[in-house]
Image (cartoon, rainbow, N blue to C red; front, side, top):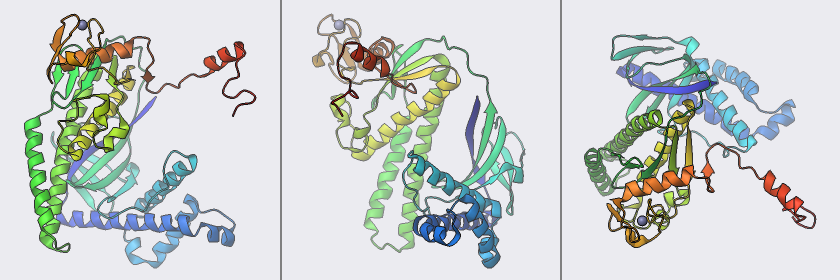
Length: 418
Ligand SMILES: [Zn+2]
């Protein structure tokens, strides 16, 4: 199987290079949006005039004509713009297949990037910490080399976010199908106080001190922003930028942590069981607390909760692809009662949970950390042949219908029913 992955590094560009990045990203966005508008508003007229549909090929031809007329569009390499058209083509393709929403125009400040095939580029190592990437028309740009790039690089994206310009290498590696993974299973409880509690009794905690510092800084910028009413002032723009940077730093810290912990857990275990997240509760206020009473209520604001949920979801995503590569699997179970059930005798009683940290079974007296107890229940729910949601496996409905037919009952598709 072929694994395709992105490797992202921070760029240290000169002012001159940064200016060019901005220009090229802007031009690519302009071309993308123009092509988007054509597909959205003019496709009928285009078809009436030419008898063909608007597509990647026709838009590439028009791009050539456009470049002949407009100098500043011609100043940006054509393959950057062709990649933008290809992105748009894929976006529409996904929409027509029903797997994505209708494509939206790209926005300045949100979609600042351009991409080109690696064949037009090359990169070299300066030393253990630094690399150089050749960007067409820009020249060699220094980047912070934090890891190797395995496999064959297919294309390169130059992208901007709140922390600056980055380079993303998209590389493909051919890997053998993983052998059957015989490593043990583990239950993981994601929480507010203990970030991850494992059913083996261990914990993985994110550096909360550091996050609190960033959180306080973000609140400070937020308040300062609220005081600055003049929307066009430079100082307001600067505060806004600082706020975005602080949030992005915290997000990167979380992502890094989730990457490391998911790697460690995917290496040690073959099956990882987690609770299915209540996605409806991710945006709503205290809905997440319904499934787990006393769980989320302490989280301060809706924003905090959204961030937490986002982090939990991120762990799940990252551990799932790592497990897939090692032949393991991620199992999601129903979160109901995992924190109120005794992992030894199975008694369900909410009074067993004495406080945030302690679980003491009212029936058998079993005492343990409340989150470890929950993790054990999660493991049990995911490894016992009980109803569960297995990721990446189609739910088989046929046998049930066949059984109904055998009993002579009209199935859901049988006569007389809709
Ligand atoms: Zn018990």
